[in-house]
Length: 340
Image (cartoon, rainbow, N blue to C red; front, side, top):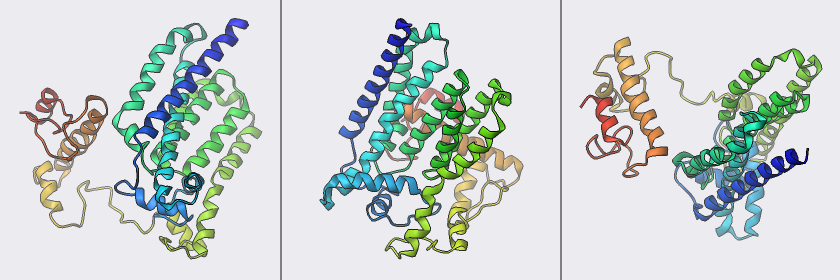
């Protein structure tokens, strides 16, 4: 019993040390002000609790608003303080990732799993996507943090089927919706865990409560119509009425593309650019060629390798299999993919 408690204590200490180390790295490399793309909007929206672009991120807005208080009235420090939310969320993510990795092995192997788990977590800490998202005002670091906690709670429930863990998962899923829908990507893993364990041990009352907990988790969205009705300077979509709020949450005002053909845009030169990847065909063969050459190879594999193999520069699309950063950044693999 004493040895078991010492093991748990050691895992807790290592987890918190990883969280502190990650937070320190992200804070030391934090964006000092506004970053590119949506960072400026998120900072402005959070600072005055305004209404950003659909479908909104009300929980992120509320938490980021609390972080702007750290500026102490100094407007010039608001952006940096708002960015710090992502740094803290990114650092805390490491802790739950570490604990989750330990939960995937048996009790007798957890001590030997500590070092591999820590190495894996540190790889995530320094990978391009995690680091980039954790130093600016964006929703992704917080969304990944919530997803990591959901997965941890599911693994804890698998080990000890307590309904309270199941209710926590439901609550976190609702809160995650109020940050970014990518948090729901953790739910397929949760369904696999639940399926392996079996729902037979779950009372129907707990399942009904889980639905209620999910709904409670989405309540931060109430701030959207409330602030929209207040007429804030940034009030995208003006979702103060029920109809406008529905359109805001369901993204009705965004341009909708058909499922087929895959190559579909309405901007100048789009057809010419798409033809360079599809061979000029808009039939099924052209769509498949476009998918494998552009979406899978150029967009996915290249971005994936940025995280773990590095890149030559930050200019997207500049480079070649000979000079690097064409698809994956690895010349031998790029030649294989593009057939040169």
